[in-house]
Image (cartoon, rainbow, N blue to C red):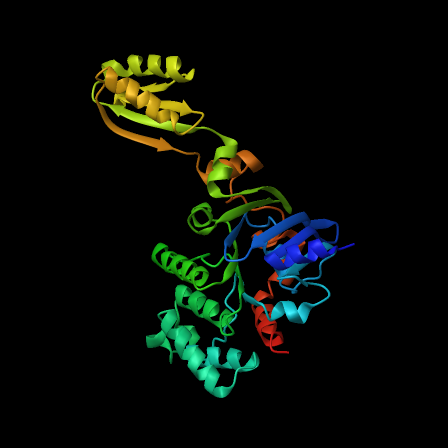
Amino acid sequence: MTTRHDRENQRELAVAATGLVKRFGDHRAVDGIDLEVRRGEVFGVLGPNGAGKTTMMRMLATLLHIDEGRASIFGHDVRAEPHAVRRLLGVTGQYASVDENLTATENLWLFARLQGLSRTESRARSAELLEQFDLTEAAKKPIAAFSGGMRRRLDLAASLLTRPPLIFLDEPTTGLDPRTRGQMWDTIRDLVRSGCTVLLTTQYLDEADQLADRIAVIDRGRKVAEGTADELKSSVGQSTLQLQLADSALLPLVAEQARRLLGEEAVLTPESRRVNVPLTRTDQAVEVLLALRERDVTIESVTVQKPSLDEVFLALTGHDTQDPQDGPEGQDGPASAADSRSADTDRTHRMETSR
């Protein structure tokens, strides 16, 4: 039974989900996931293709039925109040849901009208978004002439026509070149600065590291870890102090100091005059550097390297994010048959927000 305290807590969260389950036949694409997304943050869901990220997001967006568990968006129950939930969401799927035969302006105007904006509001909002997403010069071009990055930006713009407080971005930079990915990252940061909350799924470790305030790691339909990027990195291994000395003859002295001060064995590379010292805490690097300065050891370069998110994911799951999991075309197992219609589903979702 949901208590008054539970309801108040749910209203404080943008997304609150408990025990989400989605089955496709005997396959559990989502297997008991709990999720809490705070207002005003970018929450990253990290996992390989087929991990269940897209399926989970579609459940939260009312696009797939929740088989077990509960979910709410700003306190509105996803199953009991789907229309209220849809009015609070903007959804950008993995595939652009724009019409190839229309221009950028016509696409935005069409979606705006479907979502209940007046003709004047639709024109004004479309022009505003085209400028915001650097698409003004391409406003009268048909979508068939757009690059992949331009399509993704237009698709995101269409999700923002009614200024929803919560944006679902499902792998928004898949297939984009590095420059366009950077532009999309800047756009996502701008959304948060303007007051939006963003739920972002991605298989790119650097994307989660750059954008997400907190990250949930999903593998085979289950959440295996959650925290900030630094918390996740700290949970799976030590940081490393990396030094390059001016004189390789002093490497044994550095190794001896590491044993004395930290009780750790340094890894020496005489050919490049390098030494790696494991650290339990990052501030231990200061102790080592001060001791070496007292012994007149000249250091040419120094870095403290934390474990990468690649190492985090490998330690948590036993494989990296590029390993596709069960299911055709890297989708969420048998759910892929439904997900292949994602562009039509997203377009339908935008229509239904106006009802």
